[in-house]
Image (cartoon, rainbow, N blue to C red; front, side, top):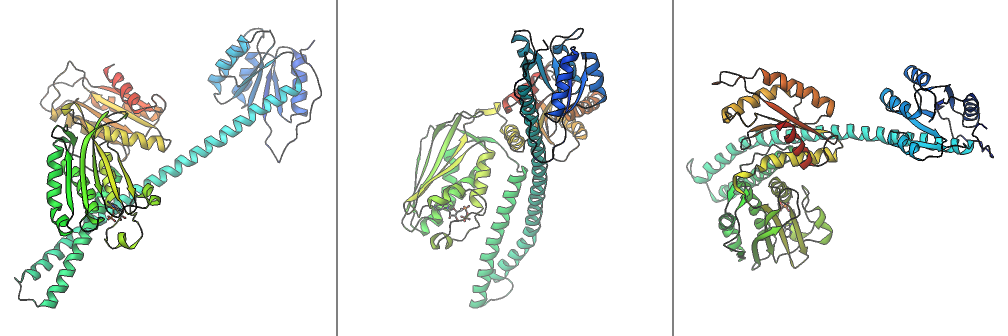
Length: 534
Ligand code: ADP
């Protein structure tokens, strides 16, 4: 008995023109080889080759590429399971299907564990064999198509990111360059208006005042564009400190008091004295508050009310568990429901006479969101048309020196980018083992310069973690690229003798790559740190 149960064999219909699949049948029984070879060639339309043992099969696989290897389990010499392991070393892409005939499911499962795509139990049914092999091959085709598609998408995505970076760079340079001549024009107009260059009449004053107002508006737009391009390109510098939120809020309210008074708008606050200190960049937090309170004033009619509240806020977030939430509530014109989801997008403005009459560029909330996110915070809005709006954002509570939010911000941002762009991200941590405590800021600076030489791409990010005394590098590279960069770094640091020290320091490199070795940022950082410690 050759192990076959031949039932009605359905001919396989071929749709369109398909490339012939190459199948290698490995079995020590000649009869099985012959039957399978015939059936798979004639009925399934495969190109079939045969081998009578594992050694012959491996020799053939070395010479020729097969789409699928159909192998028996029990063979003299190397058995089917060993053959599977050898094939996966030789050609990891080859599909394998195991034929088992010895009543146990265990070896079939073991075959699947070793990478087989499917298994077939003897007695074999030719119709079933063909259907199962075709299914395995179809799945592979779909997988390859998807993989190619993902590669194309990744390429397109990279190109888009490159163009986006170029655009941000252009906007940044252009706005920067435009600000200087604009400042000179403003000076000239102000000089004329002051009367120091000669007496000016009423009409001239009127036109010069109009010019000054427009210059201020233009300066504002340029500043906004510059801020946004800095946020988008990740070049915004943050100066994190412990902040007394109550003081910052009072400062901003004071600076906007005149605008509020002009519209008889009352600004109330509900901020407890015991509100914890936050960890933020004071200038940026001021800018966030100025934008939100400024908008509340702008979009609230005469005699309206604004309430500013600050209270502790708990999140389930990965990094900062404890936050403070700050709300700016107004009883102004409100925002239509359909605009709420896009209100933080750049250039988004609500159409309509009430909104339009206030001017603006539609950049304020996009910048505000970027600034809040640079603090690891979140921002959202609740609003009802005609009743008012409440904008709420969160900031992390300060835990003093322990935190280095700027590093976390960068890691967060780059990780998100890699996730969204389906790209790789390798985190390198370069530091001196604990027992060599001679790493001061200047040594760290010199080390940073040395590491910089080892990174090849402009997009690679280098970060000096002063508190924990290590240099972190983030590179968009896979395991292979990471290995090369690590070798380069190790080569360079071997020669690194800091000025003032007489011998080279022992410097260690720890690294981890997403998604190959770590699937979350926490894991990425944890693994790199573990490797740094050795
Ligand atoms: P700008 O105010 O410069 O137009 P923003 O990005 O700050 O740009 O705001 C975008 C739009 O969101 C505004 O044009 C306005 O339509 C709406 N908006 C913002 N804040 C409020 C608010 N407090 N009340 C009503 N509408 C608001």
